Each structure stands twice: as structure tokens, then as C-alpha cells.
Length: 539
Image 1 (cartoon, rainbow, N blue to C red):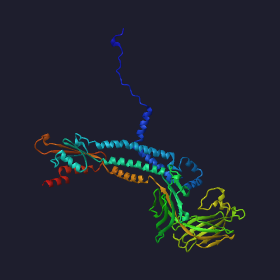
Image 2: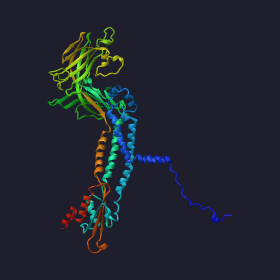
Image 3: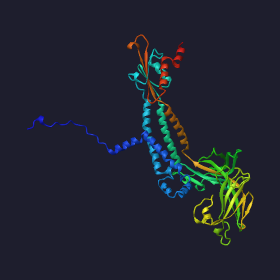
Image 4: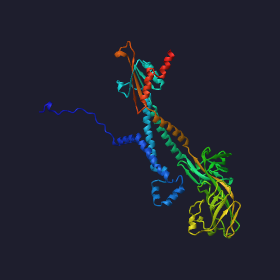
């Protein structure tokens, strides 16, 4: 029979362990890592690196023609880059992922820090440590002018310290602007990202060449833009209705030929239906209710009138584009696809179409070949044209530019050169088949960029507050000081003078704390301006 003492001991009751869900633990740790400041800085760096291809490679939303040319120049590399979104970087999945992660990281980082900062602002400065002599800054004052805690607190408050008095001890703290600047900086960074997102989603822009004259008026529709890009949240029907007509363009130049000012005068008709006249320049855009109109450049349109051998006339008013030189030398082409239409059938004769490729010179040089203008203004205007006859390739269904001749038609022999001529306004060129080309004159044109950026105001305000927050974060230093008032003679409350012990501690690196602490000690001991003014008043 087993005795009671031989029975096995019953282990003491233990609290059951709480099982941790590994999925929740993983999510908690992932969120903690995502919302850390280190992750936010890494994502910000990745966003800057990811934007580099968007600045180096042409983008479809900005210049689709250059993207097409990139495919022609790099037939092997371009399709591979296109598969990973290199020609639409800022709308790609991977760029958006970095953008959203950065946005989430900043919000998750700011919210708890803001809560802790507000809590710290509401708390009183901590009590003084027992041994002030161990602090980086320490001083002992005998018989100071401010010999009690209330007087010391008054000195500190005048210097904008947060002060708390606990009996014979004074605790003071300063420098919360550093954390406030940090929070303001990161909040402004979120506002910048939000402004960019709003501008990308709800903004739109387009480029247009506007020729002078009422017959060349521009109305704000998608079809009338040479290049246009609408945000994902914008439809063609959402474009605001307005029309522009170029009335006059003025360009002024220095004696060296450099431009001093460009000014365009347009007639504006907005939604209310009332037309008004407005002027704008390169650095002073035309601001409408729903868009801004920017002046990018200018040029001239040669007006060329062609009369075929049957007596039918056609007029070309296609703009010639500037070739990049400062004297506004322009290159272009005038195409007459309906020249020499068969009078019996009324159909085009493909091998009888006409095109004139060449240059427009605002001022023909006195010496040398007429291939560059001598001055940007129209002092001696002329066109230097080369005539081509044949099949222009317009009926082949292949898209082409209205500003350039299709050189492929020349290379394969379908277009043949028939002559070259320099024409001044009013002069006529008679071709070999009896048809004529007359240089009637010119009209000015301007290149406009029209855009609507709804996040622009938010970006401006956020950028300003971002700089303010950055300055506060960089230059503010958080620090604490304590003063303890002790009676002399080992604590005897009678006779003698009081002793004041002071200590200072920087919360962050602060090389100037020693000088600031010395100034505080001097002010408390009576060497500061506050105490000197007080003594002079008593006298």
C-alpha cells in the first residue's frame, strides 16, 4: 500500500500560454517595418531612382512621336523596355507601388509620432535628477540675485522656456520646435505627394500652334491639339469650352539679335460667350478660369498659292517650324495633293502631285548661300524651295507629318526633284509644265502650351511648409535645465545666503548648450540684463 508521502507531487498550476497567431505576428512586424522612418527614407530614395528613366527616355504621355522614333532607332531594345513600362514610367505598376508604399509609410509614421508629440507638449518637464553634478553642464551659485524658485522661474519664462516649479526645484525644457519641424516636414511631404497625384489624375495639357487670323481660331477640343495628354480621371468631354484667336504678335530684340520680349495678343471667348482681348508673354501666362495658356515660341507661316496647268488654284498655309537657330530659320513643306486633277474623271493623278520642301528666311543674308537667316525679324523675307513632282504617298494609309516631306518617296523614286527657287513676297515661280507657285506673304504664329494643374496650389503651399519644417528640424535643439535652491550651512534654514545648483542636459547634439547655459546662470546670478533692469528699478 502506497503512503501519502510516496505519491508524486502535483505541479503548481500555471497560467496557460497565449498562442500567437503567426499570420498576425507577421503582419504586425511588417507594419512596424513599413512605418519606420528608415523605410520611408528608403522608399523616398527608390522613388527618386525610379523617376530617372522617366527623365531619360521619352514618355508616351509627353511626346509620343519621340517614342515611335525610339522604336525605329532601337528595334530590339525598345519592345523589352516597353514591357516593363519604361515609356510610361509615372503610370506604371511598379512606380505606383513605390508611390503608394511611401504614402502609407509616411502616414503610418506620422500619426503615432504626432500623438506622442502632443502628449509630450501637454506633460510638464521632468523633475530634477538627484545629482546634478553628473550632468554635462553644472554650476553652483552663491547668493544669486534670483534666490528662490519663483524668481528663477520668472527668468526662464522670459527666455521662453517651459517651466515647472516643484518646491525648491525648477525644471525647464526648450526645443520642441525640432519635433514640430519634423512632423511638419513629413506632413508637407505627404501633401506634395497628394498634390502630384491630384494633378496627375485630374490634370491635362496640350500643345498647339496658333496662326494669326480669325480663320485659324482654336477651340479647346481634343482634336484640335497637336499633342494632348489627359489624366486618367479626365475625359475629352470634360475639357472646358473656350476659344482663342491670335490677333497680334510682337517680338523685340537686342542689337545683338537676342530676344528681349515676346508678347501675344489674343481674343478669348469663354463659356459666358463674351469675347475679350488679352495679352501674355513668356513669363506671364494667360490665366483662364479653367486653364493656363503659356507662350513657348513663335514663327512664320509662308502663304504659298499654287496654280496647276488646268488653272485650278490651291493655297498652303502650313507653318514652317524653326530649325533651332536664334535667327528663326524655319524648315517646312507645302503639299498640294490635288494638283493636276484629271478634268475628265475628277480623280487625283498620283504621279502629278506637287510638294515644295525648303526653308523660310525672315532676313536673307547679303553674302553666302541662302540657307540661314541673318536676323530674326522680317527685314528681307524669302523662301528657298525645292519642287518635287510625283506620288506623295498620301493614299497609302501610312501616317506622316504635315511638317516634313516623306523622304522615302524620294528615295524609292516616286518623287522627283524638278527645280529649286528663291522667292520673295509677291514673286512667282513658273514650273516646267506651265503651273505656277506664288509666294503671297506670311502670317505669324505662336506655339502654345495649355494646361490645367489642379494640384498646383497645394504643391506650392506644401513646398513652402516643407522648407519651414526642414529648417525647424535642422536648427532647433531640444534641451533641459534644472535649478535647485538649497539653504546654506548644511541645510540650516536660518542665517546666511542661499545656494543654487544648476544643471543642463541636451536631448540631442547641441554644441551651443554650454554658452546658453552660461547665459542662464549669469541671468539667475544677477549678471543678466533682466536682473540688472530689476535692480536699477529698485534703486
